[in-house]
Length: 351
Image (cartoon, rainbow, N blue to C red; front, side, top):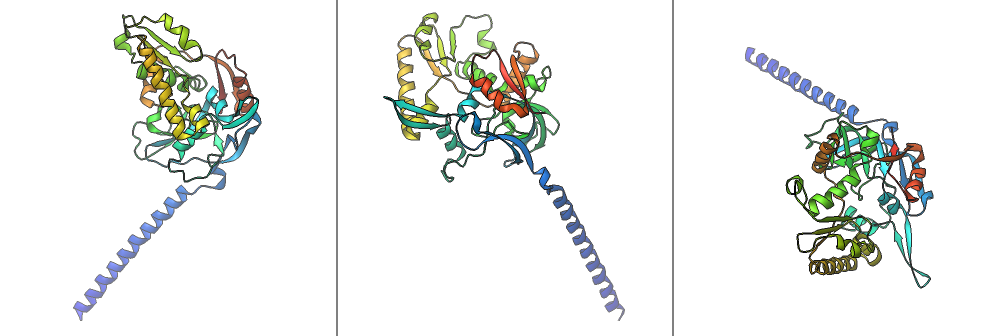
């Protein structure tokens, strides 16, 4: 009888312990749900978007743009303090028409849209126009709000800058998601407004000079080198060669390439084929003239921005800003850049 009572007491204590443990787990789960679930007001943000390609009137202020979320463990969410308008933003917005003998032959639905949509959707699962609503803007300077699980180099509260690749949602919004390897700590000597004017143009130049041209602090210090960086195109390739010393390792790098335009005009396959023929023939032509001919493109890179930040803090690179606009006047900023004749960057103060 005593043994039976003892077993009953043990079983009751065990059941009590199990019920207590489950109540703790359930309680913990409910706490997690309360943390991850936010009110509807906190799931949207203001942003400037386009719903189609066209003139400046297609820019639309969206007060209820969905708040971006982290999809991959190497991503971070940045609260945008400042952004800037680049010519590529204007070109990505515009719908151009190709004319031949006075007749419209083809519509260009935003600069580079064919290649960029292929990058966004490699398997062509989505239908045409799924990139909308599209947020433009490549440059960003702001503060990290949240980090993915694999991001160890940054933490919430860090002041950062970055250039967002053109196939991703842009920076004319309150928040933007950036890969951890595309972001860098903001130069300490710059404000957010100043910092937002540099990343895209600095990385484009860095790609051309360092990655494609091969110039660095080791092979340039105290040495002569012949190098031309062309961001104009056209007849520049003809007369600029006269300034290079032939057959001495001279390099000509151009940022004006027909790659994206060929894909927009001819399609993916024919556009890539035409691009390959063009770059091959030009490289061979310049080679027989004793000059290395290269094409360069923008490349998003946090490590390169780290090096650029060091040059900025050392006073070797300085931002040049022509005009700033509040976040409410993004269309006016686009018109300013679209008009040309700029003497500096056009910056948007978001905060």
